[in-house]
Image (cartoon, rainbow, N blue to C red; front, side):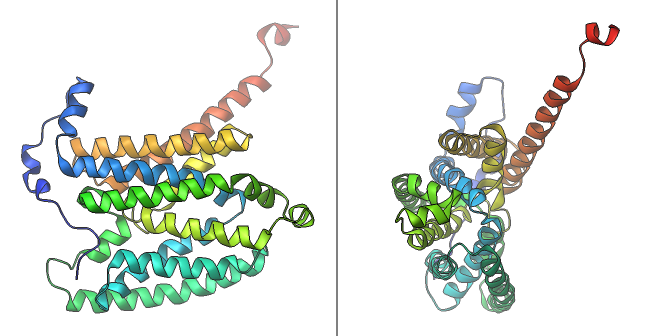
Length: 311
C-alpha cells in the first residue's frame, strides 16, 4: 500500500538548506540542486498551466460549485482506494471522473445540476469523514498523515515518477482542451445557438467535465482538496476582470497560475510556511490588488480635472 505522497529524504536536512540572498540567479541555482524542488517545479508548472486554462471555462460555464465538489470527491476517492489496497491517486481520479460524467450528463441545466451536485457532495463528505476515521485508526504511524496531505497538498513530497506522471497527464489535458476550445467556447456562451448549428452540446459538456475532474485530481497534490480554488478559480477570475478576449484571458490565467505557483514554491523553500498556504495567499492578494487597481483607475477617470473644477 503506497501513500499518495511521501516525504523525501531531502526534507530531513532542511536545517542545512541555503539561506536567501539577493543574488537571485544564485538562489535559483541553489534551490534547483535539490531533487524534491526539481520535482515540485515540474509538477507545479504543468498543473498550474492546466488549472489556469480549465479554470477560465469553469467560470464561463458557471461550474465553480461543481469544481469545488469534485475536489471533495477526490479526497474521498483517495481514502477509499487506500482502504481497499489500491493507489490513492487512482482512487481520486476514478471517483472524480465518474462523478464528472454524471454531472456532464445533466447538460446545460444549471439549476438541476447544482441540486444534484449539492446532494452528492453532502453524501460524499459524510463518506469521506467515515473513511478518514477508519483510516486514522488502522493506518500505521508512517502513513497516518495521508488525509492531511490530500486535504492540504504536499508538493514538496512528490517523487520523480509522480512528477513525470502529473506532467504527462496535465500535458494531455492541455492538448485536448485546446483541440475543443473553439466549439467549447461557442457552447459555453450560447448553447441554444450552438445546438441549432449542430454542435454536440451534451458531448462537449461531458468532455469538459472529465477534463475538469482530471485537473482537480492532479491539483490536489499541489494545493490539496480544500484549497483547489487557489489555482482553479482565482487566476481565471483575475484574467476575466483584466481581458474580455477569450483566448487572451485563457493565456493570462495560465500565466498567473504559473507565476503564483513558482513564487509560492520559492517562498516555501526559503521560509517555514507550507506551499499550499503561500499559493492560496498569493492568489488572494493578487485578486485583491487587481480589484483595488481597477477601482482606483475608475475613480480617477470619474474625478473631474482641476481646471474643470475651477471653471
